[in-house]
Image (cartoon, rainbow, N blue to C red):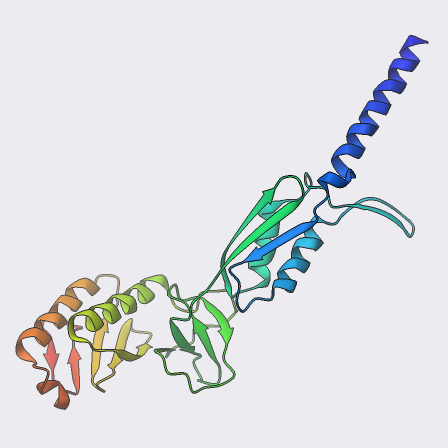
Length: 252
């Protein structure tokens, strides 16, 4: 008999614990706090969080018992779902604030350039990492244009359209020209032969070699020496191009 009552007490204890962790109102998610987002809708983010925290505990025919238990909320999965759903989001931090809150901090991508598809029919914002995150409806964007002159395959929002080494080269070139000579760049064309053609705001071009055995830093150093010594600011008015793809730099 004692064994029977011990079993009953044990099951009752398990039931209380079960209820306490899954259904006790104090531990149900009631607050979803979202910050950092500008373009991504707060309501859309909230809907994803709710879909992740609403757990079916018991389902029988049309009878469902759900729980929003703080203990069942999976912060890592919520983060993954938000990143997968919104290409605009570069990073997401999800924290559980005991006993009933979830805090979502969103870092959105900043447009670095406009990426042109191979046929120029579609244009997208890309960030400094070369990730495509928003298709443009209006084409009059006054910012750096990056063109892939070879077939780069399909373009998917949230995925890289330009390789990391190329984006790093463009960033270095842009920074060096702007900081040392107050020259902006308007276009960056990438060809299959690992050639990068940059058009400056002064309407002359620079040709770079991006092959694996080339050194972009050395090419930028050559460019800086030319613009500091041989090619004056006045001479740049008639400049057509500077070619840095070979051991010796050429210009016209």
